[in-house]
Image (cartoon, rainbow, N blue to C red; front, side, top):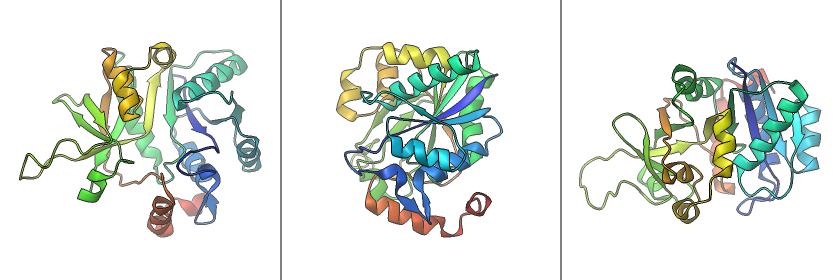
Amino acid sequence: MNIIGIIPARMASTRFPNKPLAEICGIPMLGHVYHRSKRCATLQEVYVATCDQEIVDYIDSIGGKAIMTADTHERASDRSAEAMLKTEAQAGRKMDIVVMIQGDEPMLFPEMIDEAVKPLVDNRDVLVSNLTAPLKTEQEHQDPNEVKVVVDRQGFALYFSREPIPSKKKWGQDIPMLKQVCIIPFRRDFLITFNELEPTALEIIESVDMLRVLEHGYKVKMVPTEKETYSVDTIEDLQNVERLMQNDPLIEQYR
C-alpha cells in the first residue's frame, strides 16, 4: 500500500504564533515531529505541508521534504489534501492512505503511527481513524485545549468535545476520561470526500474536525495507545513538554 505522512504546519497560529519553530530541547517543535515520523517504517515518505517560506527553509535545512500550499486553508485537512494531490502528481501514482500528523505533537513515537494506521490496513470499511489516550488528571479533563472523546463498545467515536465529557458532576465514581491524539489516517478518497462535505454546526461549535465525519453519518475508529504524549497549544504546554523530553529516548537519534 502507498502510505504517506503529511504534517500540516503554519506560523500564524492564533493561540501561539510561530509555534512550529518554537524550540524544545534545542530543536524546533516541527523538527521533532518530522524526525520522529520519519522513523515509522509504515510510511513511505513524510512531507510537511505549509504556506510559510520559513517552514520550507527549515525543513530543507534538515534534509526533509516540504510542499508549499495555499495560504487560504482554514483546516489542516484542506492543506493536507492539497499536499497529497501534489505528491501524487509528482510520483505519478495515487496514495492509499494519508496520515495527517499534527505539527504540535512533538512527543509522538513511530509506533503510534503504526497503531493508528492498522485498522485501515486490516479493514477496508474503516475510512478514518484517530488515536486516543487516557487523560491523567482532572485538570486535563477540564482543559478546553484538550479534545475529549467518548466511544462505543466497538471503539468508534460517539462524540468529541472541548468540554469535560463524560460529565463527572453526575457520577461520583471513576469515569473514562479519554483525549484525542492528533495522528489521523485517512483513506485517500475519503480525505477528498471529507473536504467536500459541508461544514457542520457541531464541528464549528466544538472546533473539532472529526465531528463533520460523525454528523454526515460516517464513523471514526478510535485506536487506544499506551504511549504517554502531550501536545503543545500554549507556552505553558511547551515548557511542560520540554521538561518531559529531557530524558526522551529518541532525541539522540536525530539531534
